[in-house]
Amino acid sequence: MSTDSTGVQLEHLQLKDRVYRHLRDGIIDGTYDTGAALREVEIASRLGVSKTPVREAFVRLEKDRLVELIPYRGAIVAGYSAADLEEISEIRQLVEGACASSAAANATDEEIAELERNIQQSQDALAKGKVAQVAKLFDTFDQLIYRHSRNKWLTELVENLEGHQRRIGRLTVAIPGRLERSVEQHEQIVEAIKARNERRAERDMRAHVASVMSDRLTSFIAEN
Image (cartoon, rainbow, N blue to C red):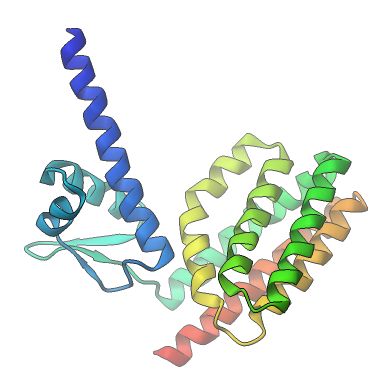
């Protein structure tokens, strides 16, 4: 294969990935809301690309369960059913509980201090009413727990859920008292990790995930 053809393939791969990440991030952060129609021509024009990388991105997003591909309509941003939320909750409790348990066994003192700083920053942002900042700090908290577990297999499993987790988290921030409850639950999780209590860390993380997902499910039922 010539250098030129390799360069073209690499450029296409990078372009395809950029389009995919743009659309994925937009769905997760709410730029493209549930039920929104994503049309190849419009997106290609907006991003200054051909329709091919857009079409390829749609296929990947469908595999991620973030869009539904409908003939003659393009891609529709997918929502969640009550059953989806219950199933995601079950998986998250298992995987994230295991991550917290591993973090209790493996996190260094400095890494635990980093988690404590995150909680303090969350409390400060919450007191100032900076909801968007709190949401970002929550995402960071989750990433720290995954990283400090030092279990690459668990981390890979979490990464498959990460987009849905962030998206569901965004949909729960407006629920009264949810942010306050999450900060308190994060404190309990870190206390267990600091105490090197693996069982308690797992239990508290699972309880936290169940609490968040229960609030979202209750809100979903009320909305529908």
